[in-house]
Amino acid sequence: MKVAILCASTRSAAGLQEDLSSPTLQTLVEDAGWQVIETLLVPDDRERIRRWLIHACDELQADLVLTTGGTGLNPTDVTPEATQSVIERPVPGIPEAMRCLTLRFPPHAMLSRGVAGVRSSSLIVNLPGSPKAVRECFDAIKEALSHAVDAIHGRE
Image (cartoon, rainbow, N blue to C red; front, top):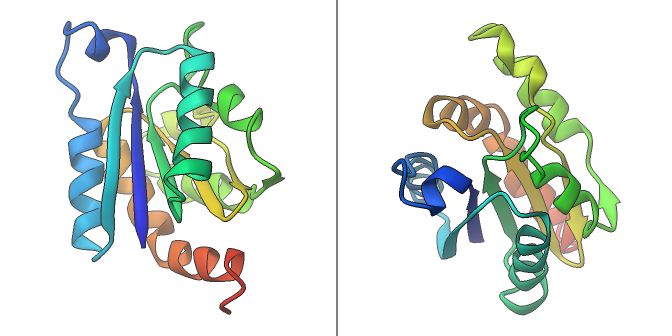
């Protein structure tokens, strides 16, 4: 599976804090046996996130596009809105499962606004921005992702 990863973090993009979530996500993806074809770190900017999502789906033709960061309640958290503007079909069960299966860790999981959906032949999934939450959420959905991508490609 070809995977593209985007980290949306104004502080990390400005060099004020290290991006730890996308390297964590890249390791999880590679440990699953999937190929990371591109990673990018951008500030919390709706249009930049939107353009990259289109690039990852339409030009890179990634099977799976994972984002980390920008899913909370801060005024600058716009990843879900950027994602909703490019998807053709929502897949609400994926973020519902992440929130449900991770609520027992910190109850803050219920505050995540991440979404998931299909654009063309790519599945886009928003994950939270902390390495711990990335691990928990990825583990919650990993088994379903291969099946979802196969279904999107008509291989199921």
